[in-house]
Image 1 (cartoon, rainbow, N blue to C red):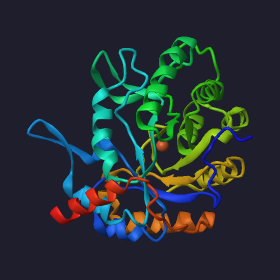
Image 2: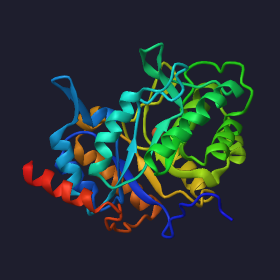
Image 3: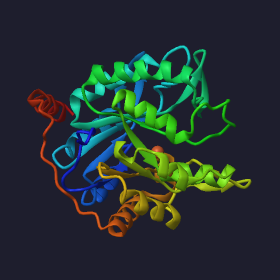
Length: 312
Ligand SMILES: [Fe+2]
């Protein structure tokens, strides 16, 4: 029996990031994607001390809600912080989810805060039993709170590992086995680690329980001072596409391949660059759009959304 109850009968679909108001971009990628990835940390703003979704972005999302489902991919949860994850991230999630048909939500297996201070970067968690004890109940809390699939993404290693008790894949396997959470497999992250310190991608993929992978991330970055940077700033390299093709052959439950690009890079290159890249990736993998019917099971959401659109 397959332990992961999320097999997509039609195979994986394409997805891409939408984090800033740009209707030309949104309409341009729509023919190619079944999912749109949104990051709460980017689309929320604080106004008069209150957190709210930027109204123009919400309006954009609602305008395509009959065509795509949404993948909510956070940055600020900091699930690996010793003092606890950042509850304000979940507060934003609480505000966002009633408006959209979210297929699943996800975060990074790392931490961005120490003692309440923001690191302005993200660090990988130590792969130890102590960290497993800390993470497993947190994952279960999030799973039971939202009642939808929750995925974790492995991240690049900016610092040497702290006395690891498990391999990278072994640690992820334990987390998925203990909690039933899914995984995001990010091939570009793996390539950064391979380039920067000789990480063995093949061994990692051979050891990882690939049945837990529900989403694959791809991106194109840059090199600086000899390091490959985990920055989503450009076109996807042929090597990343090749790794993804290999991975897809062994990830039977992967439902989405997400091309990630930062809003800053969209501004730099222009929306047409992103549309062209999404079209190229779609063609490379021979993806077809499956189409989407609102299956959120939440009829109230449709009414709320209609009201928001009318008010907007
Ligand atoms: Fe990623």
